[in-house]
Length: 139
Image (cartoon, rainbow, N blue to C red):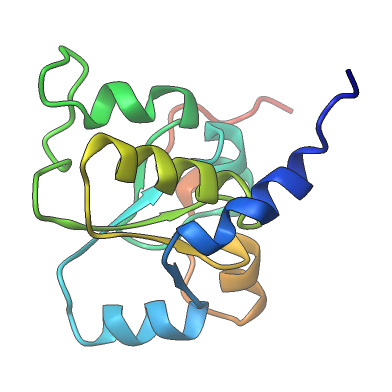
């Protein structure tokens, strides 16, 4: 059996996930809509590149555990009925993460098209995570 091409697979799943562009997300943030931004990138990506302001870091490997109220790992920003926008670096991992949340029962979930890279490329606000992180890379 041949190994499946991951991006081909992710692309086949995109139609199942509601998507917001950087423009649409910025408009919603500007209207102060109650959105929870979930950054599923690795911690070092967040430190090195920054993050969308007011986003919560949720490592992809912990998403289901932190989002499940029955788990000891549960994070209080995951609540039934809340609205979530999940993002990664380029918009691939966030498709899988959004599907996972939807499969868990979260019904108001979007992924950010083109991820943080698209957000940053458009010159949108970026939080300097390195300035406040105790986990900075030592050079």
